[in-house]
Image (cartoon, rainbow, N blue to C red):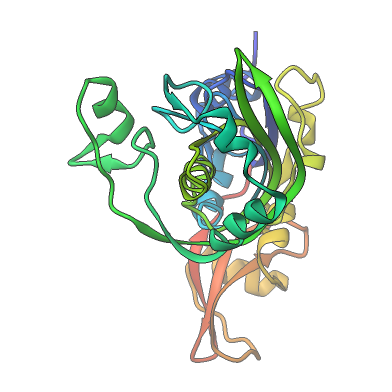
Length: 305
């Protein structure tokens, strides 16, 4: 039986395929012995890779991670389109093999270049975006036709790592691209696959997706749910915050003042922060900003019992 825990921190989970993000949170609640577990951005069931979880009071840090840039490794299959823009959807059609074979490496590189930088992207219709209060994917599953508006996103890196031509599957010809994408929050890699295929006139969808970085957190430090050392690798709130923000080391007096809701004077230029205010004992007191030479709390972090 798992005992109740008050330890707070950030947990880096390497999500395995077919697990939903909700499944991972539910499992972590049992492993950590607490109901207070949240995540900083979902991954589709098909996807694997980094899921950043907050445990207990560290869930307050997650708001600052949802908008961070992310890095993905993916495989795009050109030559067919699906209803979900990935391999889990139903096929809408296949391009003629001759048309796929006419695509050259230079065509691929030009198509990728056009999808790099600041672009307007139409999310997949089966995304989690809400339409009139209901998730788009739920409306699609109910048989509705959903059209989402284009949104500005930034793709700062879209590199082709390997191109495999003449991939044959069920008598159809495809091109498989292994790619690395670094992008702003809200970018859909499935939509990049769809749009690349459309621009080349052959259709495209995603067959593999793995998230390797979220802001300052990397997949190299993550563990799967089956790893017995997972919970032991909980990053303290102070350690996690130090990766996310500049650190301001507090004195005992300043720590006490912040804890009691006061605004201590500091020798620091005004700044919106956030700064991670860390006590002499190494605990995270809160996130702060500097206004008129005084520290102002943005988020308070209660001490673990």
